[in-house]
Image 1 (cartoon, helix red, strand yellow):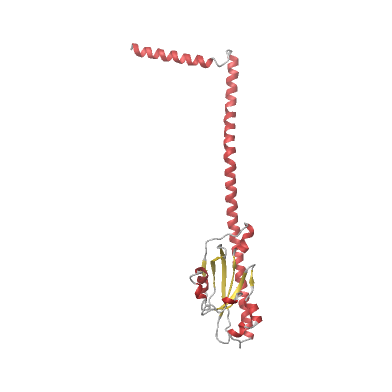
Image 2 (image 1 turned 30 degrees about the vertical axis):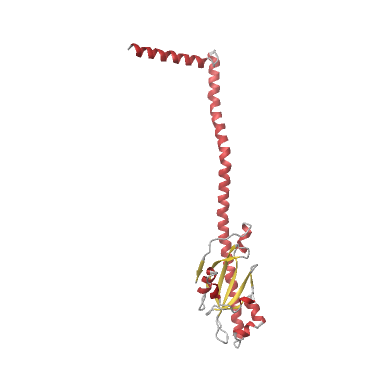
Length: 245
């Protein structure tokens, strides 16, 4: 009991010493002490608020920038989707227009063979037309996949089956058009400098055959980033998509 009481007395004395030390920093007059305590109580929220402002001032700009970037990316994706659809519709319409022009020509020249047509300037002008800035139309045999009209003479009379391994995406769209079918889709094209870019191709059959029984198919193709790069600067690629009807 004596030891416990001694310990309690020691604690009380120690507490008094601490209180006296703290009191030494405060004014002696009660009124002055009240003023100081009031000032402390008023300044404390201000100090806390200032600290919070400084913290948010560091974090808020980063959050704002991230939100702006995410919003811009989302808007770009929506805009790109719209432009892609417009580009696809443009290429499709170009294909259908050329196919119709060829049909009308063949109807008025039923006696002409494939060789005759290849040597006919007017027919070649109809068969090979520009699409966009760098694209073009080409004409192939819709049964054998042999190209008959192309802006590059070395491609003419080439069996396009030979491109099935080198350009599988291109061949997938072409193969789906055989036997007089409509086909369309994306494929990847490798530039001489190694850059990979997306191309879109639409193929439509020509409803009139040549005098030697050849059925044509018209293919229109161009780089899709010709239509989309205006909203984001340099061309960019996206995963290839292929489908046919």
